[in-house]
Length: 506
Image: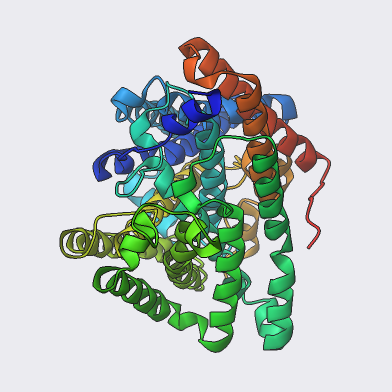
């Protein structure tokens, strides 16, 4: 077999992993974010000033926010519960140290501190958990697209061939989920002020970079005979095209249907698509082609997975729009957000029950078809992931209140409560301090150029695969390459962010 055929076989005919293992990995990224925040607060407690060195900030962010993810999906994958447990223990130790040192300055009982915390006012316009979720989905996807070509990356984490729940299967749907959370219809800025026609025209224009990137990827892959997993999207289709057409279709639907009814569209679309798959021969067509022998003759046959999975991804997008609208409701206190966490957890519980029923009576999870079970699985796990980030932000906010004057970038700040006295205003942590520190934050850096980060990761992944025999790499070489690859991507974003450069032309 040629090198191309070997690499294609290496990522084909896989069955994914268990739902439990995917779920066990979800707390890792939020715990890394929590650990970074607690370390910054502890630094402030000891030095009386925040960490302002950009070099130290970058190294700290990479070591705490990115490196544990690389280890957990390679050498530590056999004990997936171990990294979150260790980081959680470290966080508990740091918090204990901060709290014990803080108690020397005040005699307020813990119960009173919690009551004051619940009454704390927040900036209702800024939800850092959304930013963290979108950035980490991007970072995890970037890690996965290169790591999957190395033998140290478990085959069960790669995309399943037909049915199954691989970690990378979740990443595809999570990308759609994250995009929908911040779509114009959720933000309700240009969507409200513009006529529907002009809004649609703007949305149509805004997808051209994705179309351009999709065509560019298609031409480059074909020209250099790069390895392809045909049953993933088809012969000519790729994920950039999926992102573009899902966004365009959603804009068309939301121009007709009120955004607050998007969940109805999502449910009907996913259920109807599943019924058609089960009742008609559509499922056989997706899996085996029009002749039952996996033919790829004709554009529709050649790209059937990519084209027909659009219905499932559109359902995920519409459901995520509803989630985004719920999160954008006016909440200006910690107590409001704690209630929101409870509501989201209840929703997750219901979704997991529905997932069990769907897998038992309709179809197992299939990213290849983006069926009903896949849609429910993606939304349930993305909501769980978001709740972890939300709880992380609340814990960091509580810790910041223990150490007055401390700051954590990309985290909630205390806002001035209505009818506040001058004393209250001076006690509130200034929002400006957080924005001043955001220049030294990897989360903010990646967030400002997310599409560029994803594109850069794809390009560097291609270069690495052309230059290196990834399949036969040793563990030491694999870890070295993955760390250099991610550090390079993060460094470019960090430099652009430091120079206040946002590469966006639409």
